[in-house]
Image: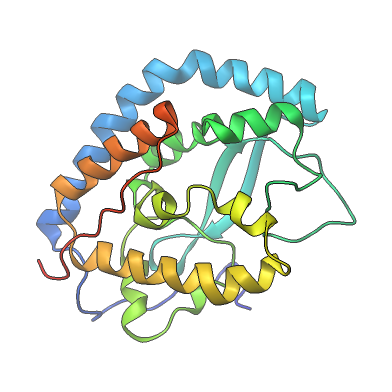
Length: 230
C-alpha cells in the first residue's frame, strides 16, 4: 500500500478534462459550494455541537484520502461513529455498531457530508466526481482506469448515486469486504471512468439535482451515465 506521500503520474492519460472544461467545472464548484456554505452554515455548526455531544469526541471527523493525481487530501465530515479499537475495517455496513443513533440520521440525510463543501472551496474536492477513497483503492488503479485520478474527488457522483444504499446492501451479504472489493468497487470504477471520459457541465448539474432529489424525496435516483466521448 502506498504511503501518504505517494503521487500517481497521470500525465499523458487519455480521456481527461480539457483545460476549458476544468475551468468550467471549478467555476461551478466555487459558485454552488459558496452559496451552499452560506445557507447550511447554521446546520453545520449545530451538527458539530450535536455530534460532539453524541460521540463524546470532537464533532468533526478528519481522514486522509486519495485525491487528484493520487495526492493525499484531508476530507472532513460530521462525526457519526464512536471510535472502536476492536473494529478497524474501512467498510461500513448499515448495522455497524460504531454508528450512533444520531449519526445514523445524519448519514441518512447526508448532513454529515456538509463540511465537504468547505473542502470544495479550498480546492481539494469537487461537488461532483468519484468519491475519495482511503489508500489501497483509487491509488491502485491501472491502465485506462487511472483517468479517474485526473479529476478532484467529489461529494457526489454517478457511483455515489448508484450505490446510495451501499451500507444496507453490504449488511445483507455474508462477507461485506469481499463484496465491496469484487462487486461494488469494480462497478464504481466503471461508472466513474465513463463520467470522466464523457464529462460535461450539464451532466454535473444533472447529478447535483439528482443527488438533492434522492436525499429530499428518498426516491432511488436514476443512474446518469455520460457519453463516453467529449
